[in-house]
Amino acid sequence: MCGIVGYIGTRAASGILIEGLKTLEYRGYDSAGVATISEGTLQRTRAKGKLINLQTKLEGLEDPARLGIGHTRWATHGKPEEHNAHPHTDESERLAVVQNGIIENYRELREELKEKGYTFCSDTDTEVIPHLIDEYLKNPAPEAVLSAQSALLEAVRQAVNRLRGAFALAIVSVDFPDELIVVRQQAPLAIGFGQGEFFCASDTPAIMPYTQAVLTLENGEIARLTPMGVEVYEFSGHRLKKYPRTLNWNPIMVEKQGFKHFMLKEIYEQPGVVRTCLETYLDTDWDVSSGESPIKLDLPDALLDGLQHVQILACGTSWHASLVGKYLLEQVAGIPTFVQYASEFRYAPAPLMPNTMTIGVTQSGETADTLAALEMEQNRRTEQGGDYAPRMLGITNRVDSSLGRLIPDVVGTMAGIEIGVAATKTFVAQLMAFYFLSLELAYRRKAISLERMAEIIEGLRQLPAQLEQVLEAQERYVEELSHDFSETQDFIFIGRGINYPIALEGALKLKEISYIHAEGYPAGEMKHGPIALLDEKVPVVAIATRGTVYEKVLSNAQEAKARDAQLIGVVPMNDAEAEETFDSLLPVPDVDELLSPMLTVIPVQLLSYHIAARRGLDVDQPRNLAKSVTVE
Ligand code: F6R
Image (cartoon, rainbow, N blue to C red; front, side, top):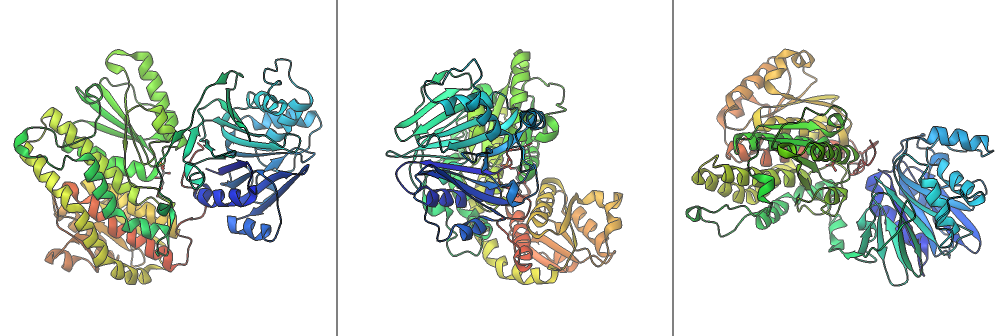
């Protein structure tokens, strides 16, 4: 959460900073600000609200500076007001800092600095940092180790050694006009290498338009960027030798391409995403008679063989994908699987089970709780060793993320960059990863016959065309249907078995982008309490596809109808029983129950999208949310 950018080089910094912030706005949009250094002055401009407000303020301002930093904020400490917007400065306004993350010991540092005479003008945790750096510039601690390189670098080093928490920083000072100092501690920070110019950002897409040579800092590292190059140090002052790597990226991926919102574009990209996953992870020439595995995940035997349990750690939509994963791992591969919220697990981990694979599922690869829970699990299993030794797997859309560095074995979900804050295409890509993993494990454990495996694989191959069919058939209808619900205040989503997570996902999508209260329930649980909520004002969306629980879900829907609820059914195409039961139908092809979530999720995504768009809301950047949740 929060996006930071920085530039040092030969071009005008301010335009580059604004372009970078546009790319990072998904990380927070409560306020934005930039600080640039030129001709002995620091120029700082900040604005409450979205980046456009900052751009309006900057319009017409000539700024020749070749050095600067910028920030887009997701408020943690202090309301989203201009005085809390970054960059924050020292008292003399000669030094400016932007931060992503949280300084946990800011209260005690603030008291210490106040006693020394420093005054504070924001409610943020960040403001202690420029004052602390200023203090170390004025009164360097005796153990200075980097003063010969730069007094600013050394003062930052001393300051960050006092900070507790998760943070990434970028710092500039009028008194050091050829230096941009950046820091990483449990929050992402990448450095871009150009020709005589260097960039920094919380995420690589902000750098990619300028250079594809990128160095990602590790935790506990500080870098000094000058027009001459980049030096990287540990917090101890020890110098490191580090080199950039080349990233592949296609700028077209971050255009809306004629769609009104990124979310709608990303919903429409799903057939293509599934095709890419199939091409990447499925042996296209596979023949059941070969006796070989059709899956090309390229994971080590030591990770996959002899497993007794799987535990999955995730948050939000990734947690919902993991629930589908649990169903597949248990029903296809026959492995008992536990899914935990990472934020709960990290403070109350289950007792260790032997021969367990731990899977971290995170679209961004940067979710603080997921990373911390995985790291904790890795450490406690390493300590225990033997049958309890860590077997870790990551499933992420960003293999170049912190997750990719924490865990050696990662399955990339190949969905391309997702800009809409509400996850859509990355969710179906996570499901694809679980199909491949459960099939590979089923093959190794001989949990299902090769003939059954061939059936599932044939079903997977049909999915891209079926997804296109659903999108084409439903787009107009769902848009019209959404008119009926633009004033609705509560929604219930119900599903069972492998489609229960789709009910949860439908409710989450609706809540986050339309601000309508929505709940997802296992359909059979309704009568144990939630049914009391139902009346004619509360529509119920039932996910009812043919399979083990089809009749049961239809009965649960009837129970809701008897309480006057308006019923919307995500149902198999051409199904007479469904036509009789539901007021509105969102039909999907009648596929193998195991594959049905791949199709049933589309109508609930479209419904949420159109209701939110109809209400005139900011679908891609809903209030209070950020795409990458890098704080606890
Ligand atoms: C919902 C959504 C969030 C994320 C959650 C975890 O649409 O996007 O619930 O799923 O913040 O994020 P990742 O998957 O990046 O760990």
